[in-house]
Length: 124
Figure (cartoon, rainbow, N blue to C red):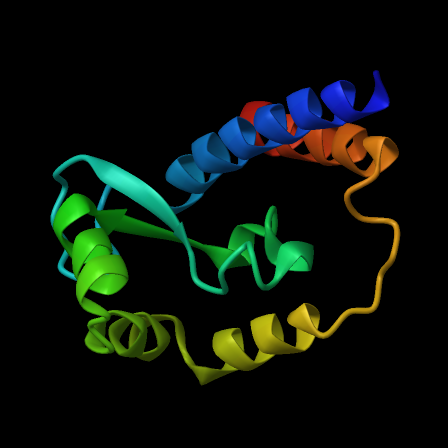
């Protein structure tokens, strides 16, 4: 029961995070400036940096072409361009956040609080 609730809450958080990132960063690719079907990319991969999964600073708007180049072709210029645009301080701050030893993330309470926080940003 708790596992399915957690999975449902995580899915809700994922959808909200995507919507909030689009609201925050706009419907334009952070790399090429294109506006074609934007996808939100985790700069630090959510699978490796779970603590940053819902961090808005970790969200990057990418067009499908740039997203494809990054994931399929491993194009290093994608992340280089993002760091150049957002700045070294942004990168360093995000990297520092990634080192957090917080153990309470991925709990039901964590997801519920994340939903509240993301909804406030979306509707506020």
